Length: 485
Length: 95
Image (cartoon, rainbow over all chains, first blue to last red; front, side, top):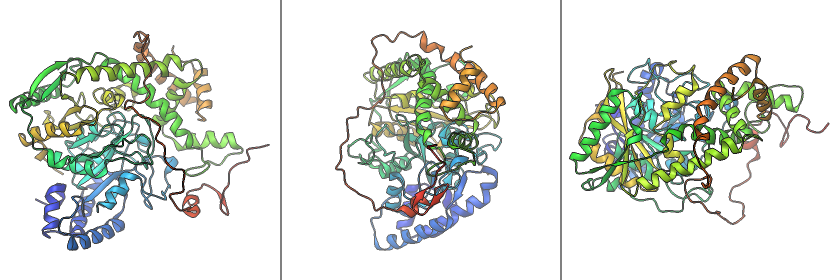
């Protein structure tokens, strides 16, 4: 097995035993990128020189420090939404196409302090708005399992890079499913932690009450290790929660005997791909075999979640994206006066989906419509959260499919935005309620495309969620299958 | 119709977006379909429900008001679309 196929924890041992150096590992990852990138297109910017320099420093630390940090010397990819000092950061928008940040965001700074090697910046839907990575200003990313299909989105580049072995692990962000849905589409593990668990400083804002940073990895243990590295209170982010970070990775093995797994009846929707339903049901039976107790729960306001999400997220986005005015940084269109500068800069700088969402959000916030749309959505958001509060009185975690179908074909849904929005139907409620959720592989459909199961935890209880995921993963082989490239 | 082309034009100006005629037509149609789908919210009774802005309880996070980073005008101005000396140069705002 080549080193690019290994996990953080496997490579950590090899690095500490000096069976491989971080420079060798980094070179192997870049060789893999060179070999596969033309077909996949995961990256928008590669940081080869910086990565090799970081790898050399990691090797020096590995020589002097026997009990090294788990990420020391590990090549990691970052979604291009993370501010990286000296490395172009575009959010895959023309409006930021030449933006070079003057500082690192908190999650990136933590990774660097832990000795991680930054491979580069991965493709995404522009400003994280999309479910297929087709809305990038820099072209599409293809699914490593079938290059005719999308990798999911918006963190599609990160998911494809992990699945294709173009990095060992990656970071993504998740506002309505943007880590979990691409993780499911590409057959990897992806987690959106509880809102407030990871600092949002240095993450280009989309919808601030929903955005959260999380790991995208080859298995559950890597997910736990990466979460431990990036989580924690950040005084610079007033919504980050001042709670200690539990030791996730060393508490995966407790088993799930007696644990209560909730199955929401509202998630068995019509239009779900039959193989997805079958695989998730089989996964639930496996959890039962492993000692969990299955309980039926109800989330009665599920049917409203897509509407609520696309009002709240777009309203917040329309406000957040007002900063792209061509004045302080980013693209500025030549124009005759100030108003025309604003209009043309934004007309030329934003892509169609971003404009659509700014329009929807501005409309929902505008005089005469605020009560009917934005305020109404916030009230229904309260009901959606209450549904989860009630359900979690009867269970420890909730299990659902991650997405209603496996990865769809490139171009299949671009003409119909509403159809695209509905691919987030199982993931967005979790963001609205601020809960942690993760996706892990649980099967394949008839076309050999991966299927993801979503586990949802209680607020700040990522540990239980990870324990359930680890128990399932240890009893199955899905995560070990790799795409043939 | 939930939204007209005139409303789309008005909202676009509020959002400081210039739309082509073709974009206006397409957005009117797409936003109309999306808003029709969202009609289901209107039919749900939410009387007595408080709006929720943040899912996790947050309180004011106070910190000491002191400088924690060194000023770095060059790094910040390096991204400016236009500049003069250590200033951002912008179109005239006052006639």
